[in-house]
Image (cartoon, one colour):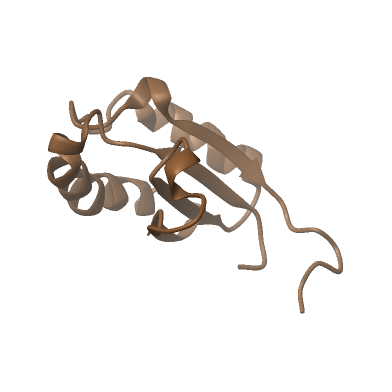
Length: 108
C-alpha cells in the first residue's frame, strides 16, 4: 500500500451471525465497493486469537486502497451508500471508518 486507504473496523451483530456477516461482506459488499471508481483494492483481516484479542473492540478490519483524489472517492462512496445492499448481520452502529494517508518516509 502506497496511497491513501480507507480503514473500516466492524463486527457482526452477534457471534451467531458471524457466518452470515462474512458471506455478505465477501460476496456482496466487497463487489459493490470495488465497483466504485477510485477503489483500487480491498483487503480484509480478522483479529487473531492471542494476546490483546480479548480487549479488542472490533474483530474485523478492512483496508480499501484508494487511487486518485480521496475526497472524490469518498464522495462517490457516500453517494452510493444508500443503494448498497445491507445486511442485518452487520453491526453498522458499532463500526467505524477513517481515511488514512501515508507518512512521508514511513516505508522501509
